Amino acid sequence: MAGKNVIALSDANFDEEVVNSTSPVLVDFTASWCGPCKQLAPIVEKLADESVGKYKIAKLDIDECPAIARKFGIKGVPTVMVFKGGEKTGHHVGLASKEKLVALLEG
Image 1 (cartoon, rainbow, N blue to C red):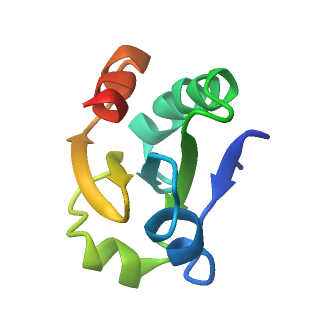
Image 2 (cartoon, rainbow, N blue to C red):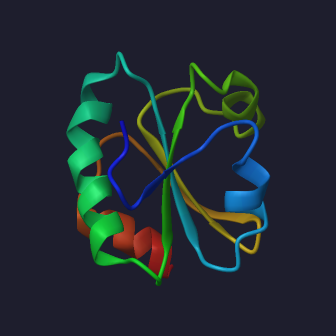
């Protein structure tokens, strides 16, 4: 379950929310069974709450959207990717601090 400012991604809305976004988008590739993903979730939600209007923060469940996970070569979760203008500009595998996520978005 995503926070109020975290966009839940699906096969249906991925292109609209990520690829066609005019704002930088941070995508948290996650899974319900993943312990570190559960640890990352509140960090991602806090970032989303603090960056409304500046960035888009989104979450994608790799079990619900396996084709998208394959397309971006997701081998482990959590994986965070940043997209700007539809292009991947940064990524991090594993648990990350809020500062690390901001650095990816700013980078």
